[in-house]
Amino acid sequence: MAQQSGIVTEAQKAKLAPPPMYQVLLLNDDYTPMDFVVSVLQKIFSKSEEEATVIMLKVHHDGKGVCGVYTRDIAATKVATVAQYARSHQHPLQCVMEPVDL
Image 1 (tube, helix red, strand yellow):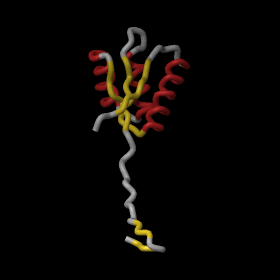
Image 2: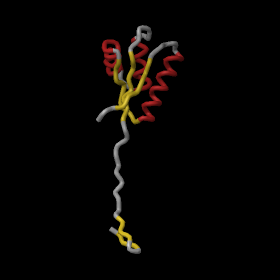
Image 3: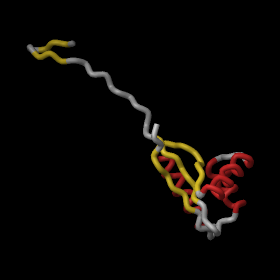
Image 4: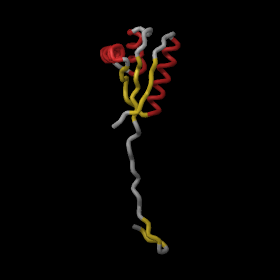
């Protein structure tokens, strides 16, 4: 505590918390080829062919699959990049982000 002119103040410690995290998900559709989904996972999410194949099969069988967990800005950039890349190749592939509950 510091005392100045009869006023008592307490030093406050800054509370540092990790930034909120978001998972990026690919959603299944009936039109996007499986090999294109694998290439998206490799190019945009830096997955190996094996990892990309596992995620692609999860998307295919369960309707969605997690591509990665990122801070909000990085997740939003990944979602936008997937959308632009898919549209440029005439595929309706959907990508979304949602908060991760820790």
